[in-house]
Amino acid sequence: MSQSKLGDDELFGEAAAEMREDVEEHLAAARETLPEGDDIWETEADNVLGVLNGLRSALDTGDAEDHLRQAKKWYTIGERADAFEDADDLAEAIEEVEELLEQITEAHENVSELASTVPQLRGALDEAHEETDADEDEEGDEEETEADEEEEDEEDEE
Image (spheres, one colour):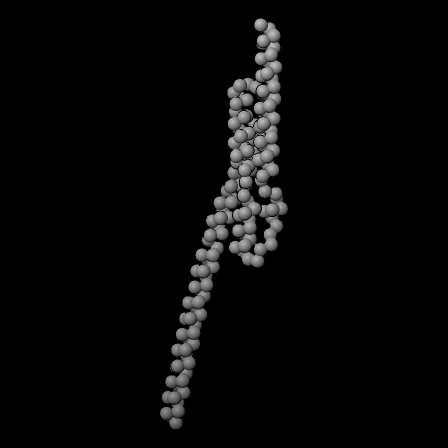
């Protein structure tokens, strides 16, 4: 019976090591799929909309959420089974990746909103300036008409 117990302990130890390895692998894969800092910092766009669209694409997290989910799943199983001798480092790493993903997701949403707002704003500003130009043209025409009428009145008086 002691041999059976020893075998079970060995198997449990192996399983715990494999779970830890799985968590670490998924965390590493999640980090690898995150954008690089330069990817969101540098741009080659011709205008603001191009910059925003480029940034929105750069903020794509790929499969990072799926890898994080797998890491959390294996961590939870291992933690509940009390399989890890020291799991604090795993918990911290999971939290770190989770917070980073939340930041990236929030930034992506903000950029997406701005990317849809900027063209609308440009259109509204263009319309406002077209109306201003049209108003100025009308005022100019009215002033010319008044000046012409004054000249005619002066000529008639002579």
